[in-house]
Image 1 (tube, rainbow, N blue to C red):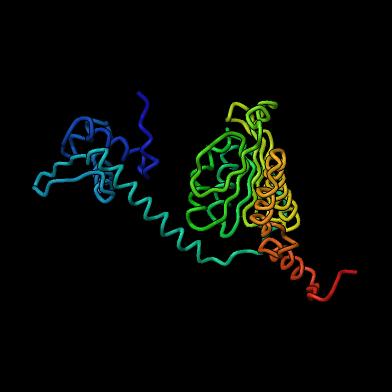
Image 2 (image 1 turned 90 degrees about the horizontal axis):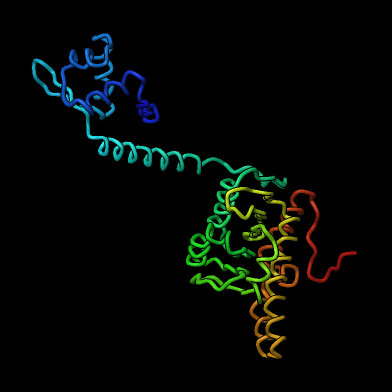
Length: 293
């Protein structure tokens, strides 16, 4: 039987042998453990002392010390609590570090786990508005996070291809979406968070392999991606309303989505876009009575 990799808990090879011997054979003296694993007695006592300090072994306080392994479930629970506390402490310290200037580069993502992680991070950090077009087999990765974003007050608008229940999320259902989705043998999605971050990805139909994916915080590219998503969502809804000759619904759609137009309403997406390039190139903002030449 291969040795259980307790080095992942910070155990040395000797400590692993000692703990597993006590765990499987029961309580023993240090000398008996040394004979059991065929190691030098002096080194065994040092290892047992170290394991005691780590909370993996307990000992009696008698003239002849007896050592006993802490049950493995109890040990793992304790290590998990310590790890969680360490992560929380690190998060607080890292959060206090100054943030770098926003990077305008475009990055290619290399694997599906990276795509999921980056997309979820954008969703979790969103403060105002998320627009997305997500095909069914990719939606499962982000549905919960999108609902959580909507619950904390973020406006989440999502184009979908099949009927789905996402409380709080504003859904635009693509007409004949299932048929449209079936036309390709891939899985596609794109998402814009606050018009500051976007990710777009193409996945293999096996849901395991990544074909291609990109992310960027470029204000220019985010403006283009956000605008494309906004007009795609609006157009999809308008086409369905107009196909039913429902002008009242079409007018309502236009009213409900008026705030999405970045340049017309100068919303937060536009403000970020303008601020990014004003600061970088020291350009003066236009006043209300000025027009670009």
